[in-house]
View (cartoon, rainbow, N blue to C red):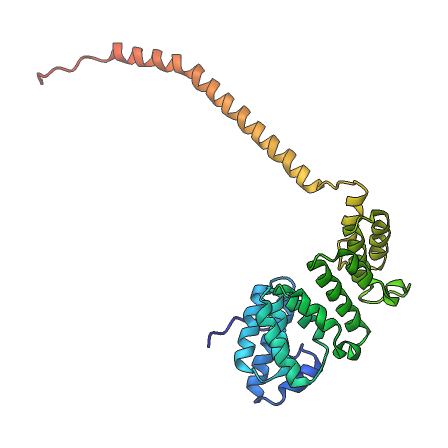
Length: 280
């Protein structure tokens, strides 16, 4: 089995206690190996999904009967848009644990596979009622996305209207919910309301999970310029100008030196005795 390099400072102890508990069913050395690969999946999932996917496949080959491994493999596949593969892994993890926690992301995989109607059907299943508040909000976001996929923009707006949206309390999911609602409003031409909700999303977005500020600026007609890029452009232009001036100076020097060189060549030719075929 081909292994991927893992930094020495990754010990496997970094994983959650629940996952460590699951890995205790494995031999100690194998458990450590799997744990280190799972740590790499978690570390790389956002910044380099393809690399994370590679580590998840190693962990999967080592311990495919561990639910946490199947879940990690599912999220790595999901992050790389391998939705069919992700759905299979999430289903396997759910069979092993009996948990409904993965229900919303499973529904979103159906969307990714071009089956929004299935995602919408899943939003109406009894499993949704067993989700915690964060899971129910996530399911609502997926359902609204499915409505948009099906060309039902007005229905997407209605789907997102909820007590969670109306609440002034800021939760981890608040910014994303408000942002999705603003985006849905914009899709149906309610621009003023959309602007209001993008502003509310920005207000709740303490972790920078959305680009609400950019969307607000876009609605306000504000264009941002990259100051660093402008400085680089000026420097590049100056370098080009300096190079042109330098080339011109060199060319002028060459032209000035040509008559002198020709005169010297003529003088050399006059002062040089003709060679004769006779020696001595």
